[in-house]
Amino acid sequence: MPNDRNDHISITEPPDGTLHFSRGLLARNTFYNLLGYVLPLPVAVVIIPLLIEGMGTERFGVLSIAWIVIGYFGLLDMGIGRATTKFVAEDIARGEQRKLRELVLVSLALLSGFGLLGGLLLALLAGVITTGLLNIPENLLRETQNAFYLLAVSIPIVLLTAGVRGVLEAQQRFGVINAVKIPSSLATFIVPFLVLSFSNSLYPIVGMLVITRAVALIFYLYICWKGLPLAGGGISLKKHYFGRLLRFGGWLSVSNIIAPLLGNMDRFFIGSILTMTAVTWYVTPYDMINKLFIFPIGMLGVIFPAFSVYAAVSTESLIILHRRAVNYILIAMTPIVLMTIVLAGPFLHIWLGDEFALRSTLVLQILGAGVLFSSVARVPYNALQAMGRPDLTAKIFLIELPFYLAFLFILTKSFGIVGVAILWLVRLIIETIVMFVLFRRTIPASIQNSLPGDRNMYSWMITSVAVSWALSLLPNLTARIIILVVLLGLFAYLAFSRLLDSYDRARVRQFACRTLGLRIRSE
Figure 1 (cartoon, one colour):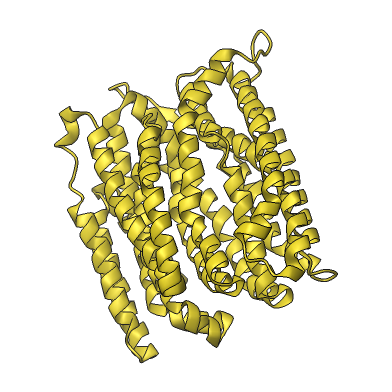
Figure 2 (cartoon, helix red, strand yellow):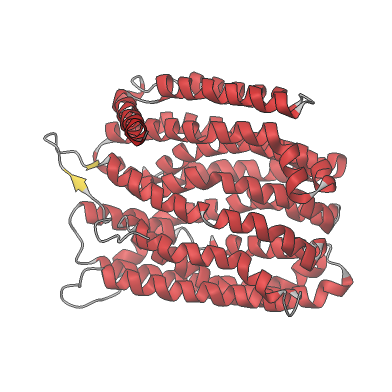
C-alpha cells in the first residue's frame, strides 16, 4: 500500500477565497478506497461456496445474519463517527488543528460508552433473537446463542474502529486506512474457512472474527493518535465538544438505526416466514450485489469531507462537486449493472450450480437494477448531511419504515424472495427521487434555477435497466453477449460525450493518446 505521508487533506485557496480540493487528491484517495473494497472480492467468490458446503446452508444463513448484526450494531454510534469526520475536516480546513486531540478523545469516549451499551443490549436480546425472531433449527440453537454473546463483545470494538477511521478519513489518509482494512476484510472470509478445518460450529468461527476486528482496531488507534498534532496546554475533555458532536450526530443516529433496518430486515422476514435455506438463496445474490456499491461508497467516503467544507464556504463548489459525483457514479455503475442483469443466470449457474441459478437469477436481476438507483441516491444523501441537514434523511427513513415493513410482510408471504426483491427495488427508486428533490430545495433559492435538471439522469437509468432486462430474455447466450458488447460500446460513447465535462474529456483523450503511442512504440 502506498505511503500516505502526502495524503493529508490538500486545500489550495484560489483568488476568490474559496477552498478547493484538487481532482487529483480525490481521485487518488478514491483509488485507495476502491482497492480496499475490490481486493477481498475474489477471495469471497472462491470461499463462499466452500463455506456453504462446509457449514451447510442453515449454518451459513445464521453466519450471514451474524455478519449483519455486527454491521448493524456498529451503526449505533449516535452519528458520532460521521460527525467526527465532518468537524475534523472543517477544523483542518480552517487551520484549527492544535485542539484536534481533544475532539478525538471526546469522540472515542462517547463511542466507548455507546459501544458498551450496545454490547449489553445485544447480550440481553440474544435469547429473544435466536428463539423468537429467527427460525433457528433446534440443533443449532445453543451454538447460535453463544455466537451472539460473542458478537456482543465485538460491538465496542466496531464502534471505536468507525470513530478512528472517521478521523483518518477527514485527514484524507486513505492509504493507511486501506493498509489495515484490506487484511481485516480478507479475514472475514478466510478465518471462517480456516476454522472449518477443525470445527464447523458457529461459536469458534464468530470468536475468531471478533479477535481479528480487535487487532485491526489496535492498528487504527496507533496510526490515528500518532498522526494528530500535539495539543497545546494539555488535553481536557470539554463539554463544548460533547455538545458539538451530539447535536450533529442526533439525527444521524436515527438514520444509522433505521437505514440498516430498511436494508437488512428482508432476510429476517425471510428467515421467520420462510426457511433459513430461503435466506441463503436470497442473501447470497444480495451480498454479491452489495459488493457493487464499492465505487459509490469508496468515492463518497473521500468526497464527504469535501462536501462538509464546501457546505460551509462555497455552495457553488458543492453543487459542481455534487453533479460531477453523480456523473462519475453513472459512468462507473451503468456497465456493471448492465452486465449483472444480462448475465445473472449464466453466472449463478457457473458459480453456485443449477439450483441456485433457478432460485436466485430473477432476484439478482431485480437487485441489480436497484443498485443503479441507490448508488446515485447516495450523492445527495451525503451532501445533505454535509450541509448540516441530517434531519432530512432521517425523516425520510422514519416515514418510510412502517410502510416498508408492512409491505415486506405481505410480499414475503405472497411472493417469497422475488417479492422481497421487487419491494427493495421500488423503495430505492422512491428514495432516489426524494433525495434529489430535498437536495434541490436545500440549496439557497438564489441559485436553485442554475441547477441542471434531473430528467436526463432518470431517463438514463430507466433506459439502461429496461434494455438490459430485455436483452437477458434472449435464449441464445452467444447472441446475448455480442449485443451486450455493442451496448457497452454505445454506453462508452454516450458517457464520454454527455457525462464528462471538457476537462475530463481532455484527460481521457490525453490518456488514450499516451496509451496508443506506447503500443505503437512497443510494436
